[in-house]
Image: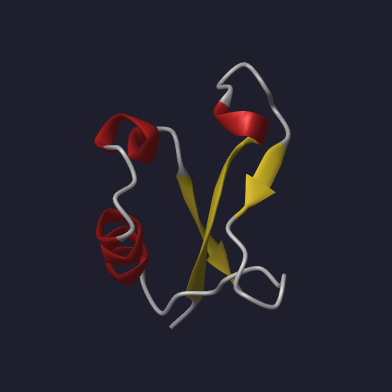
Length: 61
């Protein structure tokens, strides 16, 4: 089973094609076991549902 990382357009501006990734406390890309786990983490952190729609959940092999 592959892991999942979360990305969004730089600065949250959807016109940007470059992505920035969610980082952990040490500055490394945060890796989740599943998209569901990533979504729960973001919702628990009170990420706005509209902003969540613009995030990409990408497989991390």
